Amino acid sequence: MRVSTRGQYGLRLLFCLALRITEGPITRKQLAEYQEVPVNYIEQILAPFCRIGMVKVLRGAKGGFALARAPGEIRVREILEIAEGPLNPVECVSQPFLCKRSEKCGVRRFWCELAEVIKVTADKYTLADLLNHHSTAASL
Image 1: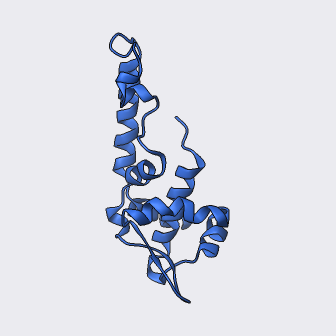
Image 2 (image 1 turned 120 degrees about the vertical axis):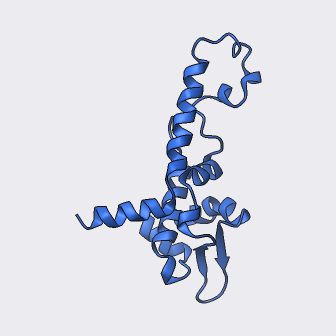
Image 3 (image 1 turned 180 degrees about the vertical axis):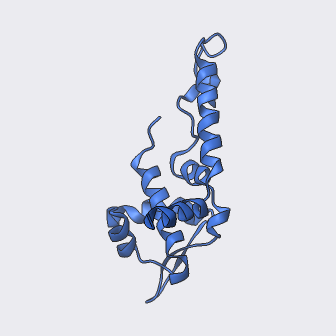
């Protein structure tokens, strides 16, 4: 399974918002610079997070983007699913009706188990966990 740039950038941008949560909103330009993401892509990536209320946009001179929830309340799985959609390695895991072979497929069980491992692992981590690891790794 490969996570697209949308998923990678989404996780990095939300991590950056979490990292700087005490400093207030971060501008699109700052996010682009800190995370090396094209400035024109920032709003496209963050739009779905804003729509569901995970990220807020503050207007004005001191405006920008900020997390609307605490980093400990935001799971990596949620971020990736918002950016990518279902975390399934193949379509038949969530939509078996798309494949006429799904009921007799000898490898579908493997794909379903792999999808579960991915989801469990992504669900295990919050942005706060990533921040804790970051500060530990940075101090080494």
